[in-house]
Length: 398
Image 1 (cartoon, rainbow, N blue to C red):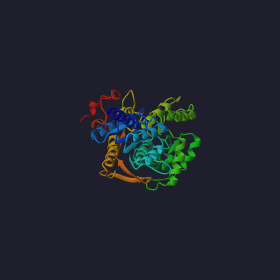
Image 2 (tube, helix red, strand yellow; image 1 turned 90 degrees about the vertical axis):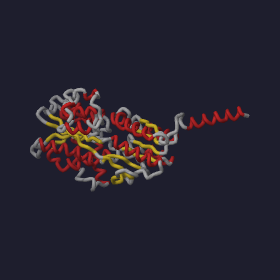
Image 3 (cartoon, rainbow, N blue to C red; image 1 turned 120 degrees about the vertical axis):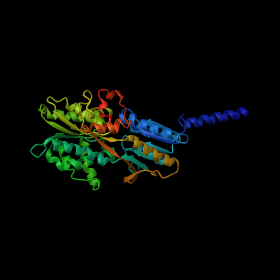
Image 4 (tube, one colour; image 1 turned 60 degrees about the vertical axis):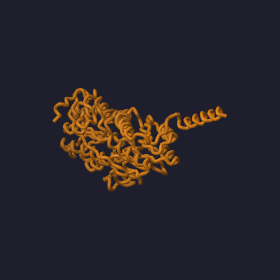
């Protein structure tokens, strides 16, 4: 009889372990889009590991990457739910519709981390992000400032190339683009748009919108323009679209001219500049935007003579460590049975989803001291990183 009971217990344990995917049970799950992108692996991924590990017993967790594959993303969410997750933090690759569906069916709370997750009928329970419209405005303002510095006017137009993020990445990419267009669109008479000619009509049709006046019409017009210059947040896609512009310019001599580039983030910005450099007579000066404060971009802003040559002139630093803390705080609140936004700074709801916002910081190549103080002095990035080996940091230490 004892043997039968022991055998039954063994079978029961085997069943339970199998039902949990052969892994330990968890309370909090994290699904990030792609480990090959610096931000998700070395920034958010690292910060989630640090913050979640501090919570200790009762807040067991796991972090999974989806390889920029929405089917894998959905299966990751299913796997985390099978292991007992009560709440899942997700940065979807696309809309996140599959993840939303699975989480809703299981009654698991979903926190959209810096990208909204929604289907046609439902959305995440909470959203954490930065003010994407303000990020876009900062990018647009930098280019307008540079244009004015160069003496841009109706009779002295400056070349402008426009690129966007992934249109399906709602609301981030649309808000980034909308913020930039709020600043740039009223001054199109100062620019010579060098995007392919059949893209121009959509740019001019955008009209003048602000975050306060943003509506469905604005969304439709902005996304129509974005569709032509959508980089998918992918440097290779950005390079392909930039190469098409280069081919269109042909043998044009740009060696005494400047170009302004609205690039959606740092990785695409670098890819676009590399393509433009292949021109027969490349531009003399580049003024390019970005965001995320990648290592190569920081080296560029700090004037690295080898890796950057100062060719990216601005980035928007979004302290993702603070954003991660917000997402983890919401998750902990949910596990503790509290309101998710308890103790957080909230912003306007997006698609009806309660939202917590983190602050942004604009970094410019013209203010290396600020970049040092914000990034290196605080320890956000380490000076001994090989990417920064050609930078003399001693001059910035006060």
